[in-house]
Length: 245
Image (cartoon, rainbow, N blue to C red; front, side, top):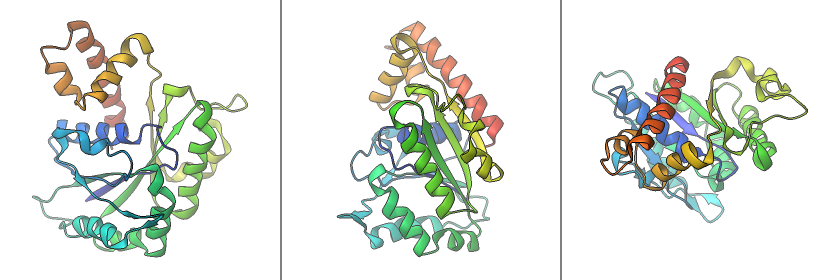
């Protein structure tokens, strides 16, 4: 099984949206993933009826509730890694509040090596944005690289708040990218959409907790809105297919 962990210490940067995109893409490819939402504040991912998301409260105050998180690991670890009928992927959406304690828990309990010993792969998905959150999201990415130097990363550049450019250099031109390029599996660009049209359409779809397929098939969705959603989906699905996510 490939275990996709969406991790970022900054809230409101699109983690749940990325979890939703991954899940939709897998479903469209005929794959039913195991889905988990561990966000103790905003369980957005779990709000999508189409995904059958298992919610887990993994926090006990400021610390990880080890028994609860153990249940997540048990659910993943109990899936036979090489049986044809086993779900081949899992998608785990984690909240900003769980970022530091969760990373500490996984590191101190050697969760990644344990899953690998069972035949499972692990991939981190980190979000990087422009605007005011840029430095925080880059710091979150850097923390993952330090804590888990041998885990491959998929980086999602969220252009909604602006492209992450500093001193005239994009993320791909930055020193943090150069230092970790060998372990970056792929880079997906979430485009900066025009807020009055494409952006508003996408925001409404997310607010309604609909998938692209549901929103496009909905007879109440205006024809031009359907067309714009199809265009956004086509671009994102093409990127994810090229990235072999």
